[in-house]
Image (cartoon, rainbow, N blue to C red; front, side, top):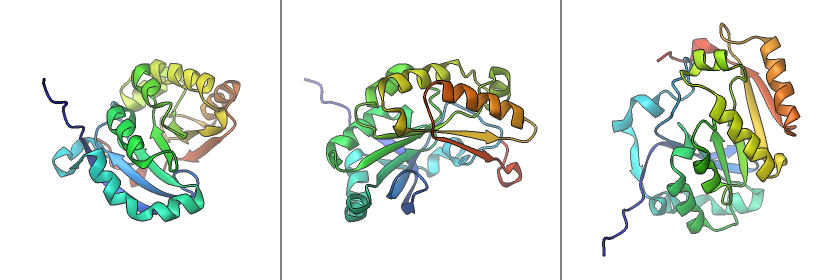
Length: 213
């Protein structure tokens, strides 16, 4: 019988002791390499451009590395936030990690949701919270900014609101100079609220801080 292939993922960084920035309580941010989008101004360009610098982890290796902060997680209702890149490209890894850490830790995903629905469905039972970087509702602006269509992301957001507690979802809407406007942001927010989501984080991108790909 053929042996099962070991689950691995490339990780660009593990950042400890983040407080109320990537979810509730004390969190450790784990950034995966790889993303389906090519945003003009990206917070983590190394998630696409420096594959050889990303470290290869198994779920067990990551668990042993972050276990040192378990007391913080339990005391503050914190845990692990998987970002990237796009964590929903690593659903096998996330599911295996949940089986190691058990139900006590919160698992949060920072995601664009621009992946096949089956990937979201696969981890929806093991994830506690979602931070969705929806970027822009207008498909033309989204495509110009990311290089990809946003239909899948919006369909996934609808599915998410119908299948998990909307209180577990935060949606981020950036104001990006030369791409969208305050008026477009207001339209995006109205659409998101129509889905029953109340936690919306609107913020301005300072694009001079980020390097264009």
